[in-house]
Image (tube, rainbow, N blue to C red; front, side, top):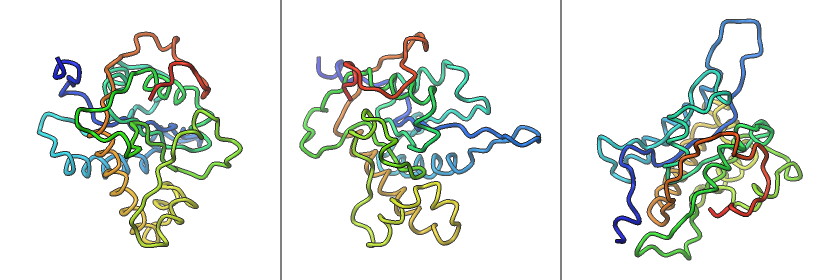
Length: 226
């Protein structure tokens, strides 16, 4: 019975990377303006595969790469939001103002969470891992987001965590060589955090069938169980 309770779809991604799509506002042909997010996604996916020893048929993560992302609730997006085990929102001013990002947050938060057999829940790991993408004033962060523990890397040289806090991952990537060492260290620690959350918690599958039923604002709700 326990095996059935904690059953997972092997085609499901381990983590869902939720981010605010940046639009190309200049008068030019359409282009992907979210390359920095994609770089994080690739690096994080490689680390998660290594840490969890995922087999050839298992996908480490999901991110919506459609150029018109945030406008179409695709089957792939619904499946990932309803089956992934870890949710990683990239917190930024754009993210907190995005109705679409709020829907992704809501879709994951509706899903019941259980502690995996033999796991120690006292470690404080949770399946929602907010990441500092670009700096947001604290007063602008909604309560439903602020009560989550923002990912903070530990056991690193003393200058790296403050650099991540002050610049965000977007800033570290924008600094080029000056931010590369900090970026690499932070992403590795984030991958370890994802692996621990995956190993300690199980989030029951629940695929949203109607995007109109998902909340388009970041607000406290009774079903916010994760």
